[in-house]
Length: 313
Image (tube, rainbow, N blue to C red; front, side):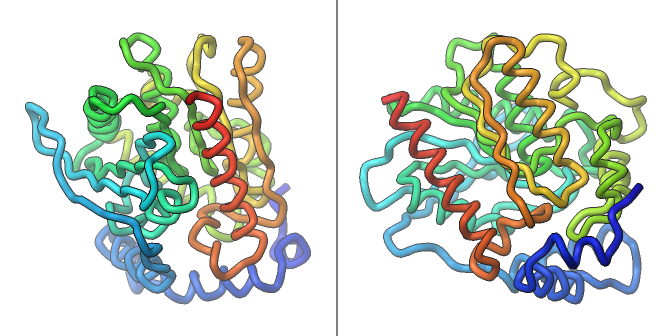
């Protein structure tokens, strides 16, 4: 049975409820068109944009491929980097770009002391699966060929976490493997069989109908793919993956996917841990400067990334 609005008022703090209300007001549109959804998404991320910390240096460039040039954005910390992170942004494979997650990447760079490379992968429905995965993999191969010998990590939120995990599974067959995988409220299965899809079908921040619409756009006209690069949780082999650290929001239809993924890695003998963040919703990273519990979770993400990098030095 879906959690009711009254129940969420008990699960979420007043600060989180205020953030939800403000986000919903900003994202209201007069039409359900994709263009309107993208405009609304832009209003939200621009309103909550926190800027870049002092000392972070940013360089925009591209990764050339036979199909097209993929825009990427490098973030350099003021100190010598402890490692390198390929970051894939969220947005249901339909929304988002380098600007939508600019402040998040800049803060991760500064606080974790990491060189972050953000990817502006192609979006659906204009470019359905496997376009986003192909771009993510091409960028991974690009950064992994860097002459720097820092440990390389994969990270992403929501749909971006899906891409990060998909690349991690694929990179097991490549010479350079990622040293860690950071998943933030990840979308991994695309089957909607876990109980949280029912329990949190109408959760603040993300509802099941929107998830299914995003998947429809990403899937395109093809039948539902069963490949790992589309849904990493469908893989039959979870062995030989890098250490996995997942952060799942309690009030999110996707919460069970993060838990199930980490359990699958553990059962295969791997190193995985899922942090269940109480009182938080999908996309809570945008609330990190407005909601104390979201800010505390972001600091835990930073610590986990630093700990992973130090263990690989």
